[in-house]
Length: 408
Image (cartoon, rainbow, N blue to C red):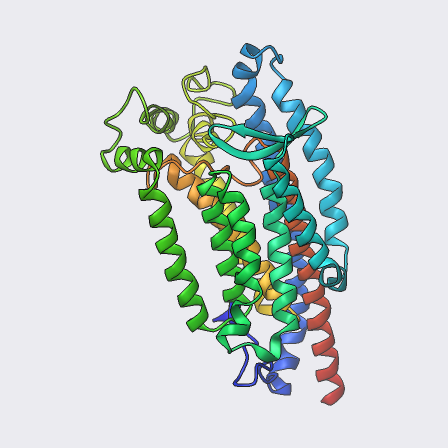
């Protein structure tokens, strides 16, 4: 598979380079391809962010006004975080990979510390989940920063232990034990199972694309599935949501209210939508219309065409990330972009799946689009890191092409 290119042999070394003739023929095309890849990564990210700002403005205007924040209150807060996130994305995109490798352990340690703050007086519970902190009137979700730090840290560890990969103990320690278990445990202690599931998926994604053996991946996946089953069956609220989902929304006046109104909003949009700003569901009929269920508002106002455009953009993002993975210089780049792919694109389709009732309500936002300042900043910085890897991949391919030309 392309994502596991450069996988290890028995001793953990990288696979042999292609023959010189192949390298010559690929060099020129790869150079132009990487130029397009970087530009498209920027373009899709900025387009989704811009669309998100427009849809947050539309979806939040009524509830923002009824909460005495004015029609633009929520929108201006999202704009503020976008104004913060975009320069940080540019900064991340221009860093060399040595920067991320050098600071990976520090990033992870600081992110764990911030996540632990949710259990201090700074912590804030929202919707039954204690996963936020409130500092100086600014509400932040440390688990979003922890996702990025975890991905970068896994990539750095895999690169450092490259010659030891293939041995289960070295593949699991310290990435899973204690690293991922500590990170996921801190989030789960705040009862946010939806975020934990996304984090577990990005850990598996980073390890898969980073070249970890199937034996280790199998152990992790089976253990993770058993853990999810345990935490679902031991929670009355989660079981109720699961039964409501399987019953097809029969509990309309209670747990079925949000998913049912989400479906009605999508259906009301038809092919071309009711027009930007014309949603009826956002008039306090659909909870979390600007957050977890913003895709329903997109479908209602922009119709089937607008909804499919969003899906196509995330598919395009996945294709571009896979291209970066296949051309990355080393295991670090493949692991980081692989984890980011599973996180951002995977979470997007989980969110969309919840809205169209493929999945029970999990409480995860639509990346780059939903309201949520910390989530937006974290996703933008993560895309900056992906672009950083893509730029390095471009330089790497140029080096290979130059070496091949000299050899010829």
